[in-house]
Length: 148
Image 1: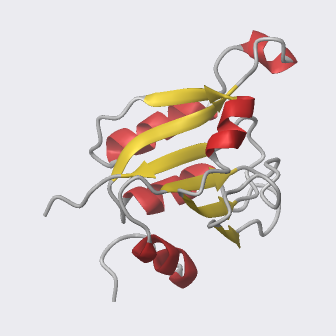
Image 2: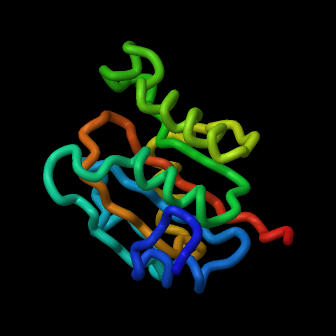
């Protein structure tokens, strides 16, 4: 029986094979997960119906199970119409989940095309596709080291 909140067997298997510097993408329902992922990345689809499951729900489960050194969001290009609206509201939810996990990590945006490139790295081990309908709700986690 697992003690952390993450009980999905395939996700636990992928994370168990990963190590320091491996990246995990939690993708929203709009992310092109079948084409924008690394050559070593497993794709697990949790998109049951619109809004079920969300990125924040997956983020909380992952943060209960793995050490994280970095959290990156997909930055909005300045010429995108959504850029004028300011930071996406879901980013504050990401920050709350990170704080609740006891981590002192900044949420660092990577511009859209650079984000796609980072998610296509050989270090990318897992993409979890959600059905999140929030805009710009993609987060790329970099695994840390287990200290104890």
